[in-house]
Length: 197
Image 1 (spheres, rainbow, N blue to C red):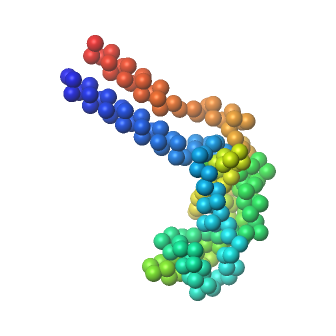
Image 2: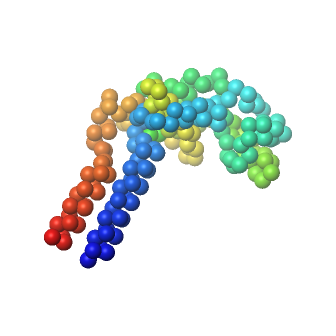
């Protein structure tokens, strides 16, 4: 019986740690606080660069991809640097709608270039696309910023029924979906102990 109780306690402690870790890695709603202060700059370096080629020439893209050291990423999308402010605005009521979790979808379609990278940094295809952008938006140093580019395979656009992209505190959506893993663990542990008293 002692072994069983110990196993159950260990399992729930492990689950609690896993839930808390997973929940802190990705926000459930847009524009929630993130301690990853480098995430916005990393997003810009991957997707909104002033030095990205404005061409479909595979040789120029190969040289560029090698130069920035991203040969290991098989699909890479680059938005023109001239649209940086519009990209930032997707994480605000003026430019985006909530999509799911911390993703916001742009209210307008964007033109961008997608590069397909094969073995040895060979470029297999370069295409121009025009789609709605799906961006993960987190609060970084008091500003809601894009931190991740999500591929929008089906070109899903904004749904007018969804709220604008902004902090959930101002739209009460977080209150409806709040989940507290610690409370769940305490409840389950209490039930387990009650069974063996």
